[in-house]
Length: 125
Image 1 (tube, one colour):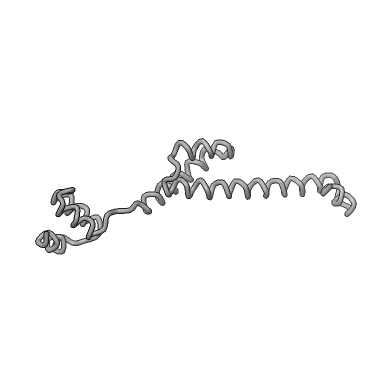
Image 2 (cartoon, helix red, strand yellow):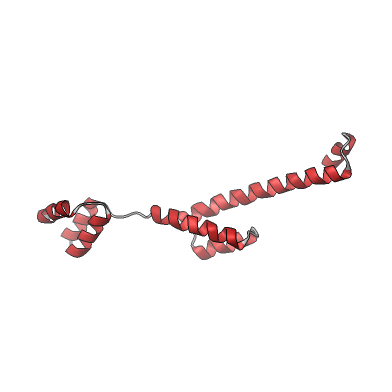
């Protein structure tokens, strides 16, 4: 019925085909973007693993280069969101012998603590 209205407004068959195709493309692109936002969050927040997300992306018929680029970006984001124990938690782990001193030192360095302060914290344990 949309094409009838466009025809009555004086659009040619080619113009009608063009506008209808363009609208279909926009709608499809919007659906793909919505799916990708969902898959992004599911992957980055570890709700779905690589295989599950890849399977779902297969339905979207995306070029493999785009899928690869997305996973490169999402893996970086996933790493950035990785949680580490806090200083207080590390000290508790050390006190309860869950971790040893070298692991404590490495983890504290990973949190950005200089050697001097790590030494002070070790003296309190």
